[in-house]
Image (cartoon, rainbow, N blue to C red; front, side, top):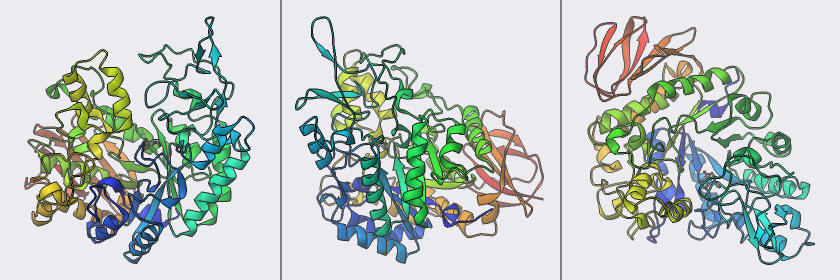
Length: 565
Ligand code: NOJ
């Protein structure tokens, strides 16, 4: 097996606006990231994925790009970006950028040209269609397709009276990848960043570059916005693979870089192999979302906190399905969350009664799975979901669109508790560095309200506590990357142990050299668990619980790595 650098990596995702503010304007920036590179180095990771910092009107916090070749002044300058790349490299840390290929901002010069007339040479950089008139002469979108950010996938543009396609916000028109000239522009831009020294990309929203160009209505039932949430009309479609192969051939294959595509929900393992199989010649890996929502938080608007249930069984089977399905065929990235998800501590851990144990247990799983693990900033200290008291505290465009509609059939309290459990704002609060005002993130009121637990949950405190989640992550990262166990943890086989146990997530990682048993109690109760093999010694434990026998009595959220005899 080839052992390229990104297989020997642990990634760390930085959401730039919330990481560290160096100039006191309440928004994180690139110089702020440079300031914290020593922290990242000390954590032990060797790869950073930075969220978009291109010039942007910030309708969707930078995923709406108006200039791919420049840095938004909110985050700094192009020189800051170059310094960041150089400073990271000096510390042995690689950097990948978030590459947004599916859409631009409506303030991008291409779109301004494109919308200006039907005959503009850039017209076909975007997807334009006539609307449909009903019997009363009223204009409707070309199809009934829904968008991910609620409402229609189309927006009427007054300049030419045609609709443009936009599967995210109104200010994010979709690019038309069927246009060869557009593709060339995007390839040129990606190569330019690689020439600046970045080590690759996390490629945003990659599943959607090809659409059903017959533009026919979906037959799916319409939702409360009177649109069909039929993602198949613009997800994982066959033509897409040709565009991506061309991207690989013309761009990625010319550099020693890594690429991880975001395929989101609904992609099958077979699609995973098509995107990131060793022979696919597209990406090195793809993120799916399947293991991120293994509880019932979307089941019912009136769900109470005490009724939230994690389906550990399903979660294990989902990890197993992907790992076995990709085995020998392609490499996998793993993560508990990114900036689009709730905090994993609140999703799957117990922030109130078992903060340390559940945080380090989650870290144990993440850092002992095969593939490349990605940590999301703040996960390493067990940051939690927000405790906001008003719907207005939520700033995300998707959340705002959702709340506008939800208020028609839900009470404000219901919306608030739904958002506190599910919204993207949960992962986007300022990083909790210490217990001073604004958690040491900034000297100014931050762009988004802090979580009020920062005096207790912060980096400074956890650096000094021997049994902190932060120290657990450090230990686990070193075990993975720089120990006698590294080869087995990175490349060894994966096999679930007692797959039907509904509370304990346990598996074997093995190769010719050794067998490691990872045993994690994913519950608040003590669990009895019988090991399949006797063990020589404990490689890692997140508790003081001593075991002497093959029958374990696992404490709540206890995590163990054991080397079998
Ligand atoms: C996926 C990104 O992770 C998300 O934050 C963004 O809103 C959409 N793609 C659109 O770019």
